[in-house]
Length: 134
Image (cartoon, rainbow, N blue to C red):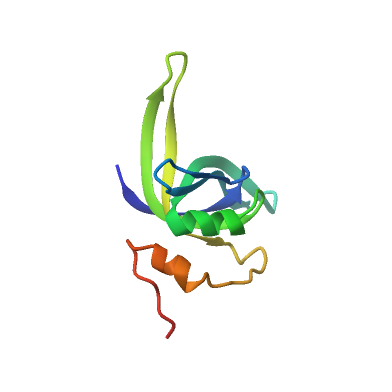
């Protein structure tokens, strides 16, 4: 299953950055997303259940994520949703993963400063065209 998906939430773990044996940068972290609703009877906002996602980013997005995102940040993640069942012999479960295509800070909760990466880094990303300023 691979569907386009966008989720807003809180970075729940310190982003983990690795370089594979093939030289591919990969950054991953867990994202907690809780819905809120207004309870008219109590006139208060109530947190609903929390959904947990594993987020994984590759290549230049992985490097930029590793340099920009910290545990506790509120972010938006857009990408492909993948749901996988697993069994390790002792336990079974389901993992919900977002293979990120874009990650950014949620500006509802704060400000952010954008810094463009160098052209050399953009050119290293040969599978995606570089965006040109308008």
